[in-house]
Length: 455
Image (cartoon, rainbow, N blue to C red; front, side, top):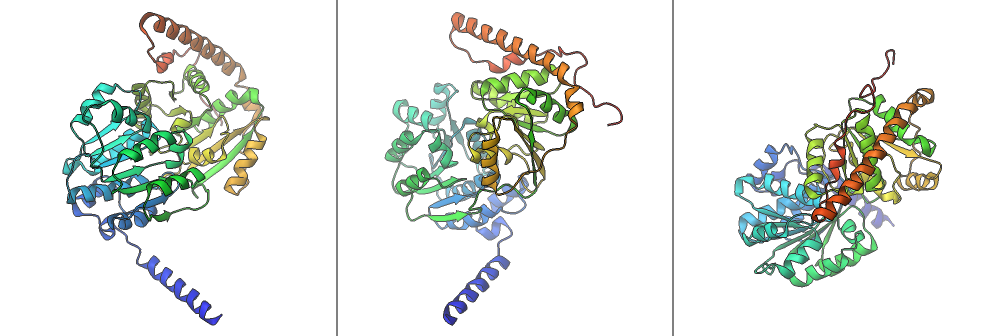
């Protein structure tokens, strides 16, 4: 017994010593000088927890499973070791990064290019929604890093002459749980069959599902696990609230909150593409600078929406869950769950859009009479009871007339847009132009509603 106590105390002492000696800079982690300078230029003052855990092991050549919450610096944790290795042994088609969504692929590419700008790193983004021919040309130039969604990559491996990944040195699967949830298992299996077995593999995931464990066994050799947060949790500086409201007044309460918290940037989550579009039109009709982001928009429109919001040209981004994970949008002040997520874990990812990198933020979840059970599951998952967001109900009700007028205009515009798209398809084949619906005038008199004096 005494021996085991002695062992425990020595382990504690070692852990304390390790904490005291925790590296404070990228140089301490073993990252080469030229990449340390790139981190400085990007404003990365010090490594995040997942970077401190993963980078030294990756530089030693180990396979890695990284479990970390959203916004924790995962991209840097795999990009820096890959660029470090690329500097030591320069080679084309050096690394492949698989990601679940197009937006995340472009974002990862931006980070690779920013970190590797001084060493001339070339990336190719291979995703759906973009012309295959231009992608084939990009692959023919043999970039150093390929960032791809699984489906489109398989297309090129099967159909693009001269393209293969037989010399690949690194494979990264980012957001692996989500890649598998989106039923890309078959594609991932095909990719694993055509890339070298003798490679380094990094698997990053927010959650360790059975599918991810299965993938880990198939794809990784003797991996090291780097877990930054092992249980589901939300960031400490995030203030979380809920609002219990009748379903028919959701729009009115949304407008009330946008007025109450005016001056902030908002990300509003809806469950369907149609509701995202409708709510964006509704808000635009009331004079708010709202912009949608969903799966039925063409790739250029989606990137356009994202860039306008990032550049602060729009203060409200309405999105489906296509945008709830992985996207690094630094200045979201408030997340509103307009439609409650059906999967509790999606709540964590949605609210993870705010309170990033040490900043504070708010999250407000709308709960209608139909959502009580889903909301209870979320509270159970995060292990806390959420407070009610304070509202003045009589003030909310004063907005109903103007909101219902805006709803009517939004419905008309959606219908007009649907007919226009139908005609376009009949005339010239299918051309997806979803955001075109938002050529919205300020139809409701008075533009954006100002808060009354004395508030």
